[in-house]
Image (cartoon, rainbow, N blue to C red; front, side, top):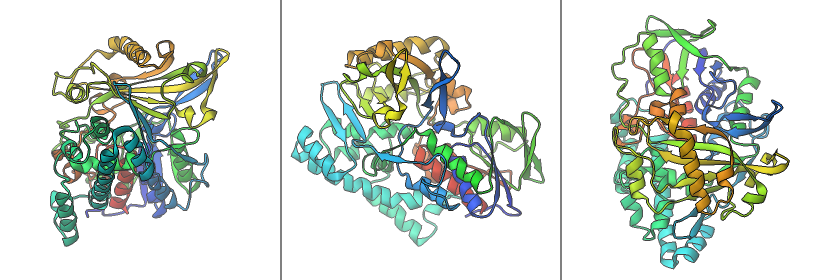
Length: 518
């Protein structure tokens, strides 16, 4: 594995999202002096918050601004343990609740299926809703998903790559690659799942995760069954106080152990001498010297910094390849007297439209061909179902925060005018949810909306919070390398580089970046 040569005592990390915080903790644990520089006023990146103020100017409540699904929390524990900390030792404490069910799924025919991580509970649910034969199919599918995950995690997810040849460069690497091949990991996810399950509703449960990888299930590599395994077998969790407490706790561990976190400071320049980054400069002119540098922002921001440092774009993949779909997400509150009568009462509800394959075709279409979903499938998240402390007093009555995510094309697939489209599209989605039984959604108080344009304004690739898609040519050793060509001491972390998109994988990316430096 290629590592950074020369001095590496002082490290600057740009970005205080999960990737940057993970990298910092692993480096501090290795005895490095680390400074994290974050553009926003608070840490977290895509697990930060949007504050909502009341008429008196005081914060009424805070909205989790990004990821709402937390799996594999042991990766957070591992990062904290690198500096001798734990969930209980940091402030705020990270107190996790295992969601049961992990998801509630609803279908256009009026049926529903709860998704449990416990195999017996899930088998009983499948037998009750889909029949005993499907329950046996579920058990077999679960075993296959676990095998895929076990075969690929160490080799394809938790590993640095210098070349595609790393897949076969040692006997153990070759053995792991052959094991995945035998399991059908390099085939297609949709057809593989169909071998186990005949009920189309169940097939959706175990393939919708392909969206995170930027692919329709019929086209996604079967190795991405590992994401379905994380979602449906390893458990989904929610931290007391909201997802942002994870980043806040990790940042506390950084500062308690000698690291520095600077917020509200945007890095605008990288100073380079003799092929090494020697310091970074922020917009206010402050200079932060470094022996090594980790960049965690999205690729447009990273590449703008590298361009400014006169680093050649050769080998960077500046065309950006295939980019994942985007999403419209709106957040607000609804009175509990209304939500108490909703048809679903789970923390996460996936409300599927009747269309499925055509939906993916619409939002993953090539340049200029993408369209919005005609029959949307939506993720409805209600965090106060799990944490009642998140309820909000508003207008003299008790309300609960609700977030709705609607997948949509990125700005290359569909260059829509979101400044004009945002409000009418949100109203359309509210009305659709109202038709599906979510009473009061059409009069929901909407406090914040993210669209492909707002994601793009924050520097995200083509307005997608899911970055580069995980097509074969952008997977594993073929993804944007975390070592920057042209600079001897600069490493990338985050969703755009290895291993990819998702809370677990960006945590791993931070660790992998730290390994390049340690």
